[in-house]
Amino acid sequence: MSSGIRYQSPDVVVAVGSGDDMQEFECYKIALSFASPYFDAMLSSDMAEANSSRIEYPDKDPEEWKLLYKFLDPRRMGDSNSHVINVDVAMKLTPWFHEFQMESFVKKCDDVLYEKVLALSKDLDAEFWDLDCPDSDASDSGRLTQRKENFGGIIKLLQFACQYGLNDTKLGAEAAVQFLDRRSMGASDLFTLNAVTALVQLFLPLEESGEDGGNFTACGKSIIYWELLSERAFEPEILEGLPREVLCNAEIISRLAHLFTLEFVTKRAYNFKSWQLVKVSQERNSMKKDLKKKDMRFAVKAMEMTAFRTSIQAVFNGLTVSTLSDVNAQSMMKYHLNAHRDTLSRHGITLPF
View: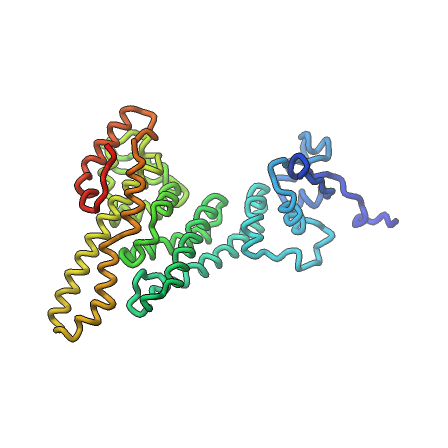
């Protein structure tokens, strides 16, 4: 057998998984160290892994390690097929690349997932995204279903990007959220309670600032939705005097955001309907039929806000405020919600207290 460097035997074992699912992989310390500062520090020190030549990851997936090591194995350096990163590979390996500080591969994953965001956002095409696009067929259920699935995918990629520091993917997803939020009635059905809660979780915690308080700053990993709420529908004053436990509670902040978004979109719908009625009277009866078929149907759907009402009522039906451990926080939350009882009532929503 040749004594060349390339023929040297593996010198470290990586054990991945636990129990019967655990698999052991023979690897090269030098390959791991050159690929990752994390491994370089581990294997160049007096740590147990360096002394025992054994690294264990009992909570990880052996199949994902196999995939990861294709990018590290020196015997595959000339195999271009081993280094292809598609969306599936990026979703699986970004957590590994991030943990092991493999920045060049994190950037490659970011590039791939950014392109995925662009594909899901359909180049921010209004004809695709608008709930009731005038040029769309009334039976265009496939498009309506697809847009909801795409928006869900964008939210998931935004969460993923925030977790692992994928800046381009984050910016692309935030741009899509901003575009759709500003479409107001045209995208109202997309911002369900689950979607709003996810976006709120990303901008929490809130910090109260200013000498007299009353100013709030979002300190989370993605503050785009806080900025949109602040400029459009949400009234930060409702947060004044609330305990920190409430300000960091995504479930409750999401309810409040939904409440004001509902109010804002409904007002916009009424204004839109009034404008359309004036337009009909000005253009005589010849336009009435066409407007009822297209634009008026758009306004009526926005006014009904079925998805919003259903999701909000479901949340308030289960609200006992018992999710807050502090009695004072519970009382303050009830006080603030009571102040908006009339707003909720106008939409057929009742508070359970």
